Image (cartoon, rainbow, N blue to C red; front, side, top):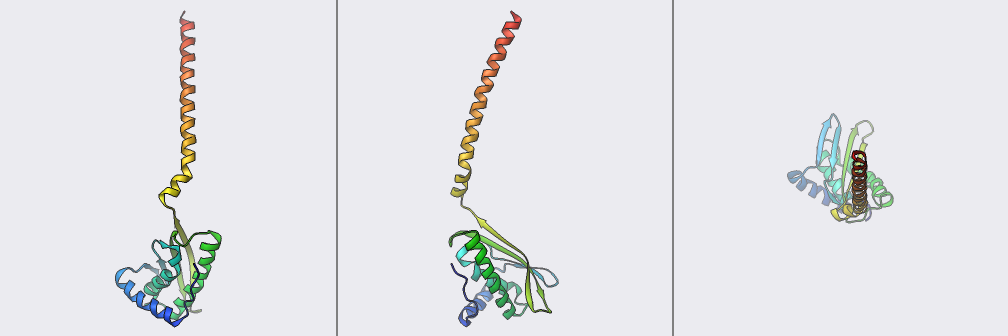
Length: 166
């Protein structure tokens, strides 16, 4: 997985076409207030986050912010996300992620300011089970041991009661 160079004319042209298509179907963005927005990729494979984030940003923000600013600033964000997703978190290309970004547009500096970036990684059911199966087995063993101990204590208590009543 590599952060693609979004400055190529072909890439930008393709993204603008797809952005128009997305606008009709799914725009993953919300206006939060004056110059404040939230965009989200939805759940996608990690290998596709850069394209999807750029397209969602173009669709959601294109009516409010110059497209060249969106492309430039989202490209930088994608580089930063690459570092976080691939190098720090070590997620694979086929791992599922959702990226949600809250941002505002600084009109004076003509740039996007990213206020909050959330990367949600999704784990499949088998991986989840592996993580807790050992703990579940330990808990079952402990319950069994406690149950046996409880039975021994009940037997001892009954013997004591018999001695006292005799």
